[in-house]
Length: 288
Image 1 (cartoon, rainbow, N blue to C red):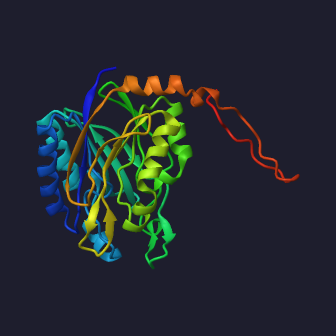
Image 2 (image 1 turned 45 degrees about the horizontal axis):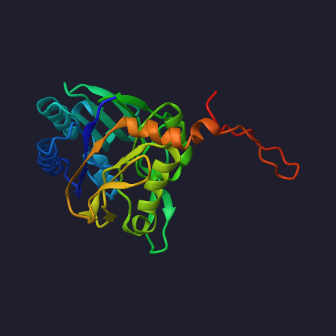
């Protein structure tokens, strides 16, 4: 397993996929110029649009999407693994998917992941979100090989479901990814601690490219893209909400070393929950 340089691209995507594609290209070229061979962008790289009708009119199928086309072209031109953290894709059944796409250095799509957990919440500051009203949730976790490492996929709100990351770690993912568009309120409260916890729990790197700032549709996102090592140390951070690029070296051997020091993946045991006589499901704590 070799060392490689990873970049997290922080964006402030607006309502126009075409304008966002221009910003995306500039930031990707910057990341590649800094030596990154794996580059990750945030959730909803293509556009952030709150209005339901405008959103429906803006998004299209994967084969016609401008962000997908731009990513395919630049991955091939720059010779990098390019991870579009997510963009809205119109499925064949007419429903939208919040979809991550990984492109190889030849521009081919290596893997896709549809966000599993929908952000349906009412926040203290009056913000209310119903992601399930717009997107069809995915049903499958994904782990794939990238530059000598195994990459596990997640998107934003997935971060709050540790069982997803544990399943990917048990499938030998040593780099976990959380491209996001965290709200400012939830980001200030939980962003750093949850990302570091997922790294520590699983002995894995965590790379999280984020949206940041006040967007055209009025929402405000937290920014603070992070790269965390398997010991839970922040090794790169965009300590602001402005667009930009952060870069850090990823050494998959460090994940193996962390898991040897704290072998919780191996030491997990099956158990049941005693609920005073009420039947409870058997919980799975370790790989067979």
